[in-house]
Image (cartoon, rainbow, N blue to C red; front, side, top):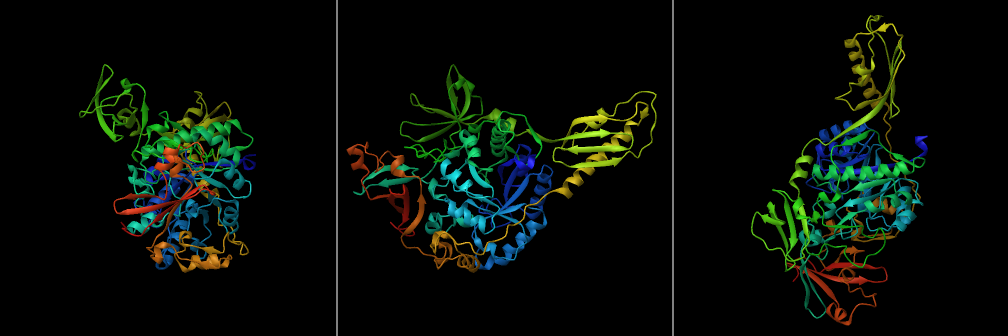
Length: 600
């Protein structure tokens, strides 16, 4: 029955081994984690040994482990990457998340491949191509609407993965060259300088500064929790939390929150959906999304274009939770607000007296200012403890010949009752012995005692049998674990375009060979290897700064004063870095063009 249901996967990020284990304990069906190298987060690398430990732990619950290998690969690194993939396969990693098509031309074991969000999949045609060439799961671009997601889901047969929470890149993922062109740090190599989070000044066509030191490209954090049901019904199978640089507290809270919501939807549609892993998580806190780092929330384009409020223009820092009653604040908390000049102010709380906050330093709170709690000391104390257990339900039956165990994973073992039995003088029920499963991942669900009434087995022997039974369950789970394998490549599949520019990220001969095999005629190498520093498009965004500022060129209600104020051509600058803005109103997109490195 379960195999006919669509499996739903909650996919959590892991900076390291500890965070990965916490994510699984708090309900993740899968985790994604960086390997020793080439993981698109240079500060989130992990050893082969640590990843192997994560794999062993995750597989107990039939949870999956995906390793991110989603950077561009240079020619000199091909052999190194091949060797790394063989190591990941050897230790039982379930799949690799990749963007560089060279991996489809390397000499690799049959490990499953997932198409990273860095592949910038926004169309049915692109998704079908990735399916055709052998990807087992496709991560869609974060900019898509529910209608666009549904269209893709209904036209491919492999699982579709979408982000549901966390930081947003303002550019289409994989197509941002700002950091590389301006600072020599490639986002596609795990060294993003986060230029979108910097403060910029906006100049109009007359050279006037019309917005000064605003975070004009800094988006709020994505939060799709209000649309999970619609995403599931649209066909999404994997729900991804962003945050491979986030700490364990963040991952625990966000994972537990989405776990509860997805479980609720599965309960609503038990004949359609099921979890992709096993084991119930027992959480010792109430998850709350705004308790964790956030820049304010947006559902981005999921439910259509918004007139504004996609960006956090005043600060890229965490906003935390809104404080409606200052009396909830405690000593050691941290608060933030914007002063009369629109500047972000952070203050520590010493105490609250008669509705007045006594801070760690003097501050002036503007009348009517919204206060945010960015640090909740009590919450921190709770989250610093062990806050979850995950248990697999097991049914156990004891009879005169042996003991049978069958768990919710479908694993069944039987061991013989090879112990001394005698006629009972004092009746002893074996159930209490088999309930003592603490220290294991199991919890007793149903117990059936088929022993004859007069049979007596000493408690010490029952305890030994229980331990043996648990060991056999673990071994049987390992031996019956089902891996996904790489799908075959359709050599006749034709790529969506015959020409590739530098933003299509071809950085080595194998990637070029792959694209030529699939119909591409003209290839311009990735900016990381062609070193072009002339004026060029470094970002293309569905986010529109004009729309965010209330001066959309298609909006007939914009006042003449505003039209004059924001008359183009527009440019933004931060320090020596200047970018021209071009607006493609037909496509409703914005292009950000660099004038060249350090141009004034």
